[in-house]
Image (cartoon, rainbow, N blue to C red; front, side):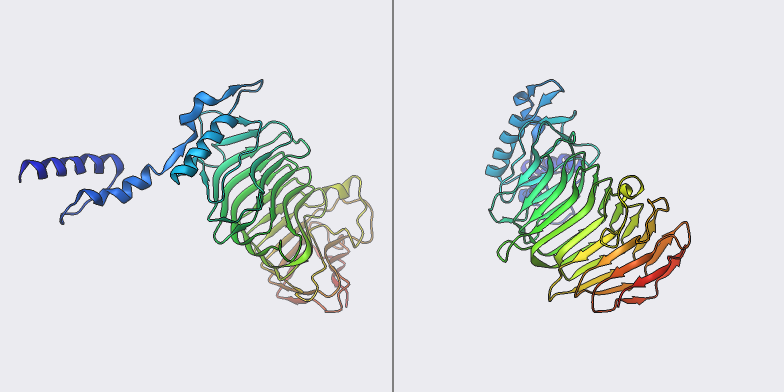
Length: 372
């Protein structure tokens, strides 16, 4: 072995030890490390800009540091690692560009704290955003009106938000004009209004083909509010939890087909125990209206656990179905600690009778289904 090859192999051995890269005994060229090494250094760390943070009352305002890091990450087309060894307060929203990837060290480790009525991450511009990624961060507000955890507009074609925690804001996640995008492993807690607010505002701003998987929403006015001026299509909730909402947990207007697979509803409509008397139109868990011609709604393998301490009422319903809705319930379970306490698990004014297959009750309601 000549001196040049010896030095090359020695260098590869050192780098392999450092980066965990394993190289076989075939012909070795120096560029075989490029993909692995590029991936390992393909990021911009906000910690490198800590000299730009500004002292404020609660700690340090990281807004100037994050803004410069985003600019540099955009120019070099690298991921932004949004993590510091302290809570990062911001006084201005974080505004990524149309393809920025922002990652942290986990939704309980990389914490952004909002100061004032601002958005945590602002993706609300009307620019097409393809392949955006927001992951592994924690966004915490102070329950100021106007605070939004993530405002996502025009996320398309593979964009994703995952492994994120959002707490103590007015709206956790707002979504508009979005299709072929996914939202997963998101924990939203303590919102003044909506945990997730999805708006399908017009034929040119509609929401289609998006999925929510392993979303946990607790202690919000409504866990989910689907607001469709224009009918939105193919929205799916998979293995999601909706818990301790103050009003109806999930409200949907003009969204269809709409699917809930293996979702868990528990102890919702907390205000029904203190200030609100329940009527058919204010159900505990789900209210669906306005589905128009695309009128299919499906619940498969869902679990509904209701409280038994509501104010006196004879119209306590778990689910409300509006006109024209074709609803299917399959392998669902309806639970209440007190038999004959809930007046109807499902209340419907639709001319289409709901299909109920292989569902069970534990603590029977007065009726499983009331409607046509």
